[in-house]
Image (cartoon, rainbow, N blue to C red; front, side):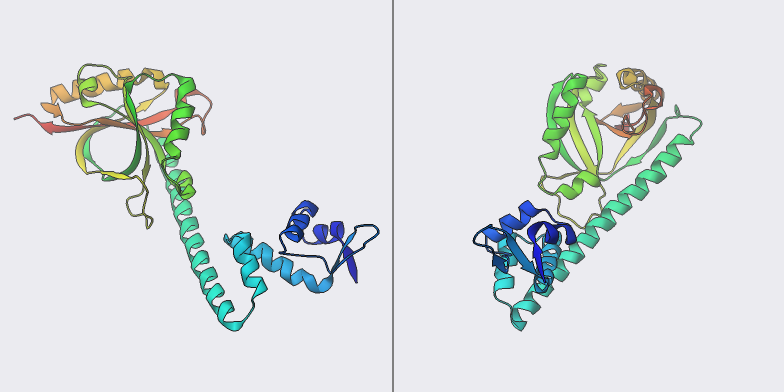
Length: 275
């Protein structure tokens, strides 16, 4: 039984354009081409090869790798190829588990924070360690239109797209700017990841565990200075001294709510007791 290119494309849920390209590179050629009409005809016996190509593409093999394997089938090559497939599947499973872990954590955090009754309480506690990829912002003010560009440039620092789904976004303010009351001069924008990740995170640094004053800011991002002022009062009243840059971690942002009154940011400032 013969199938036209449109028929085999529909049956195998693949575009006719892709099949023409596969023919061009010698990966998947028709059994017969009508010399008068130019129609490509495929046989039922070719379906298995096409399904194998789709499967190997799904696993991440390049078309060149797939062609090399399919053009030289033998038990040794098959064993080697299957072992490679197994390693790739294990990696995908680990990646999906990491994504699931982050999603579950995000659900728990949103539930926890949205059920809080006192957002204004200030705590003195250890925070970290944090694994981060950071981009220097130069201690400058950044308007709303610039944030998307800064975030995009930050994500380009890592070649592994898995981290797009497993991290949280934060910013930091230099210690001296906090002391001077300049709460909108941003030092870095960063992506923070789980410290127990099995993956080597390219360009990552570790922020060590440190004692911090910590609280939540609820509402517009343009009003975070009020929360910093509360933290400053707490620091002075408790005879503490600022010893490091603050870090703000977005908990509930515009991807979760539309009303800016519901935005939520976790703010921490490293401190020590005054002598």
